Image (cartoon, rainbow, N blue to C red):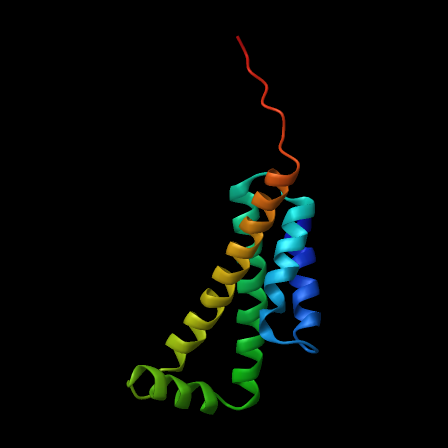
Length: 121
């Protein structure tokens, strides 16, 4: 829960001043530092970035009355008035980038500082 909030807060703030791909180093570093398992690292990175991008895309869509998303959806998908598809795919792409970066951060920590394997007999 804490890594999800850290990734979401830092990436939301950082994207105002830096390029969109700043989400990857933030998710990488946070999951390197905090995540307990590979599955949690992927879910934390995916969930946090998906929520941030969905909220921001929804905010921008309401600010311009849905005109920009409708036109971009028509341009990209060749279907008229298809803003919903664009507003669905955008957060999923960002979430995938965040999830893969979080997973890479977890595995980088495992490569540097592996946990000892405890064998039970």
